[in-house]
Image (cartoon, rainbow, N blue to C red):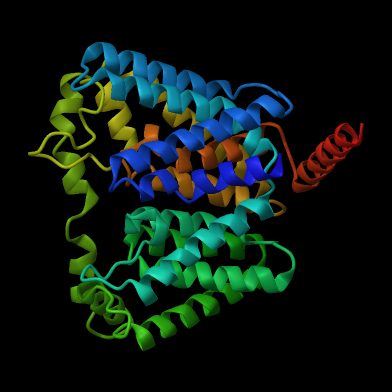
Length: 380
């Protein structure tokens, strides 16, 4: 059972099917393996209920957007729907059985692939992503791992993980990562003043980046902008930050959204399939633009609910408001939510933690009971 659990988690959290997307056949096989592992885990695990808000959201999105307009081969639509439903239903049981520390360690190991990419597989792009292919997506993984790092024991694992994650995140040169890292660090200080030391950790990671940046052949424009933030010449940094801003991308789709706010424009119509436009890069706009107002309100309601429910817990379980805030902002920069199984799984994991009040102690006890039951069945 443990082998199935960790294999499913690795496939989900490290985005293995996407990593092999350069070869459609291999990518499809890994995608099927991921879905198969989730179904297999669900079959053997204890059934504790479906996370209905996520199921309603997905079914409404696919049904409405598919009925309004369905371009291309219907097989892709069907496959996306099946995968989403499997991740929501089967992934919920996997999420219930995954502790905060397990999630942190797996994400930390995934983030280490960014360092391997930067050291051994340097290219002309200068922004590194490791297993995650997209530097922005890699930055999301790093900041989510950073949210989970607080109160991790032993203390050495926490410090090592925080430095590695911060350094790896900086190598992505993702503007969203830097903003979210600062925001999460501020929340951590509000929770416990001792966490102010994390700003020193961030400065240390920056010093290492400035020291070895030329050796790692990092993106020159963003590297110089980062350097200039800490000098008198910060005008160029601001121009780089504003360049290709998300607001300009969003504005290209405002007219489409306002033309059809009730039922939307149809499946994947704001996801970049039009050669003349890139994707909307905003999950909120994507949902309302493709499936209309009802799925949008459910979608927004889920994440606002997690934020409001987790905010009072900022003293004892600070990772919950950190994650809720992080997810709300990340969704403003991505447009492939319904096949982004990493974000869906993390969202379900947090939703279950908030609504079912599950602690790491509960998960560990549940896992120990399952192992004992397996041992007894084997000996019998």
